[in-house]
Image 1 (spheres, helix red, strand yellow):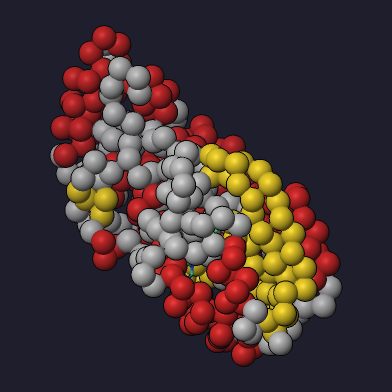
Image 2 (cartoon, rainbow, N blue to C red):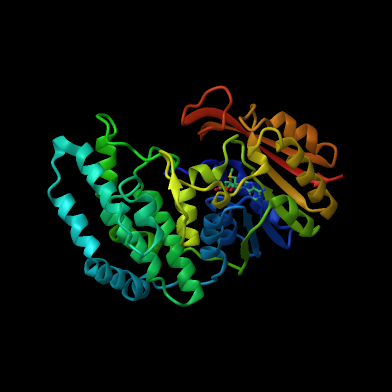
Length: 380
Ligand SMILES: C[S@@+](CC[C@H](N)C(=O)[O-])C[C@H]1O[C@@H](n2cnc3c(N)ncnc32)[C@H](O)[C@@H]1O
């Protein structure tokens, strides 16, 4: 699963070196739209300053906290013993586990559709273990996977830091196991062409995947402790200081991120109400809505954000696609709006293939050649 708008590639192509350089004059690094946490991870691991991370979505904050709340590595072996072993024991005790195995061991490769239907029926039975079985079992996950995820959630360690590290590991494991093309907006269906992808995802044992993920997460920690919380970047911008280096990477899609990542949000929250539609979406009230992803509000949100940021006196690194995006914003609009409050000291253009799902107005190809802007801005 790819993260829409992830800055992983850009960090190696100019963004990383700019953050390193500018951080020399700062006392803190702030990421106001932290997403999958690639900038947060880069800054926290490489720069000896506290990092503050903000996002509208709870799962982004869990991922960021798993790095920022620790300044030393953790033993993944201890967590495996304490947590994964317990999950392994508990999942096989459940009656639903036998029923799920019963279906998957008798799978007839010529009758995948009927197998998937039986899995869906099974997952309509109440599990009362966690939210994944009923909301996503038989769709994004096989019944065995769904039950495993629920046991992973219900057996989380008591200690807060361990809990965050394990929850972040479940989120990343779900990203690696999920049966969906790209994001969790729609699961694979058992059609002639998609059934092989569905089955290959459903075969992954989340516990095996999670052991590897846990090791990666345990070894990622901050040089200096930081903080992460759910918030609206526009309001949070008011609270910043002149000595902050602020990374701004707002949405460029006219479709809300929460439509693509509701499965991860459910894992972060540990619960979910009734779901509907082909994508198994929870009610809109459970899916954070962003003014930046609403074409009729995005310019106003941008102006408010830049006004608030400029009042603080902070230095800003703004990243955005150069062309026109489906939320109505473009690199040109960003620069024109910013010039009222900031002087643009540096402009880097990176050409590459970026995930544009719903993001680029001209063509909805999943990964498309585009230019991304990096702007270094200081208040006037
Ligand atoms: C382009 S992504 C950021 C990607 C991130 N830089 C990374 O490398 O993974 C935009 C993020 O902004 C978040 N977002 C949207 N509106 C927001 C708002 N008003 N305040 C805070 N976060 C917001 C979305 O949830 C999404 O995670």
